[in-house]
Image 1 (cartoon, one colour):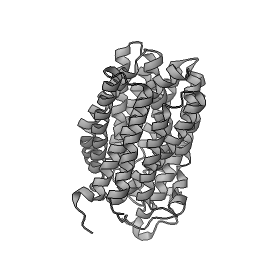
Image 2: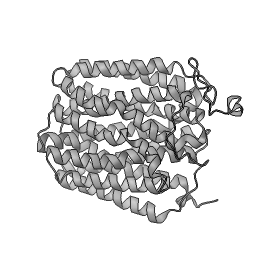
Image 3: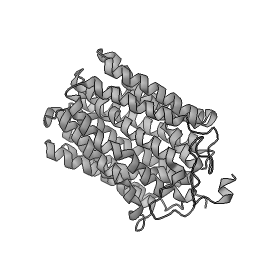
Image 4: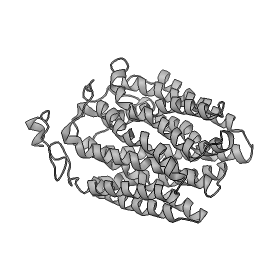
Length: 402
């Protein structure tokens, strides 16, 4: 069916890519300073908060049960609304328990939305166009983030708007955009009919392993790299916002180009570049003593994470198209197995040695690098790995010959 461009699946995904960063990035930019100034957090409470934040991600496999009742598109819009509500309420509860509760609410919306958006994107884009289109969506999110962080910086520095109002405004905008998506777009058909059961396939084992270490590694960046800027180097909320602004300026400039690069050089080389770079960055975090160098590392760190598109396109190439919805939830759960545990455990390591936390991150990146060397140059059904190939009984003979 033909849809006008402004009511097409791509237009909906673009609007989703605008709504999510408005709420989540304001929450991320203000959280560390808000937690330290208003709730007197230490590394222990911050680690605990992020472990709680990742519990909904760990439970993302339950998305498949909700899809027995709701369509993916409908559930994605509802999840965006929950993200907005959780963000809006954050500033109203400046206590340890209050922050824990609003964080979990925000996180339920965020993680379900991210799983559903990935599934919908892979169903609505062909394998040929997926790398570039996913890069384009990241670029859209980055432009939104640039505007969001610039606006937040103005609110903090010029208007001196309190945390309460910043959280409330960002969350409200996200909710309003979710309502527009609910009322303004038709229900689009997906690709192949999606399985409505939990799917775990032996032949996806390398993707699962890469996903696990990605979750472990990303938590160290998300939780402790940002916290390092505030606790060790004394960055203010506006300075952290400016740092995020620089991050997303680079994403805006390079995300779609990164998608094209992945299509040209393949997933194995792209992931190898990412993991080698992250090993160097994490070791540098452990040794850094200069605030400006730490900021530069933070920007470089964020740039490398844009290469995660290669993991998504690798899975799209090897997966049964009917597995995409279920596998999106399962992969988010695997991604968050370590994420639930690591922040709280490393919170205790943090109060003893900041450097040790980042050396552990380098170790996770090394594990990912070794696993990435097992990706074939041309992955597909029946050609998922170079070594350790498993014949899945659900894989048809026809697929195996592709």
